[in-house]
Image 1: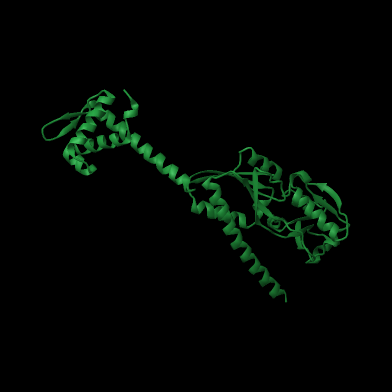
Image 2 (image 1 turned 180 degrees about the vertical axis):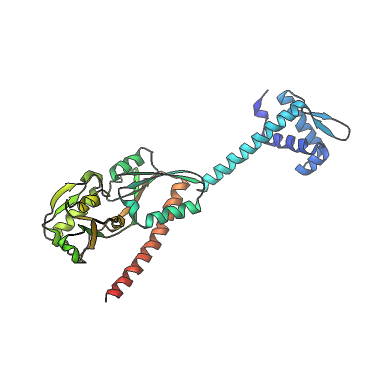
Length: 318
């Protein structure tokens, strides 16, 4: 038997005859003449080496082999149709798996859950696989093909393999123990914490944010006293609450509410905490393209909304 002769067209012809049990009616449903249909079925029987129909003068009936072949043919055609539909959904960015990375504490930014919900609503059949780590580790995951897209803290070396797109931005705030003497001031000049121990994280897990904090301190006229080191950005807050020192963190980290920590706006020019989307430059996946486009649209709407709220707060203070 030559399986190359078992094409989808012949299977569909067979299934129509098996349904109608009449060559003429089956030919009319298919849209061809009866003699060519009869020839196709006979060639199919010769190919598989089994008689599929018992022919009567006015009708046909399935042989036992024909009934077995009918069940298998229905399954084959259904599977092939599903495969084609799945491929088309994937090509349209509506199916598959998207592996997402999140650098430490980026997921606290209020726009990121909005981006995720919007994408899941628009692409319910896409499986999202999240991974939380630090920026260098996520960039390595992208280069090695273990991730598709990552929210990172720039700057980062792009090279020829990776592309970065700025997505979100936020200011930074001062985190103080709840009973700190400076807690009555809001906003608070950054120079006010010159004599405090500053809690930071290792530079190698977030060099952009680390350098931004130190540069802001130097611009404010002091070199910070580096105190207890936190393992990651999010773990800074419990250390502040425990009285190990103060910290300068992205505003969104202030969503970690606890009885032991308060947050104060920086009175002078606040350091920024941008978030970028990183992805492989040569990645042509429609899943990645759709996610990037949706993230950009959602980020623009969030920035516009946040700007409006900030203006309202400014007017209210006046």
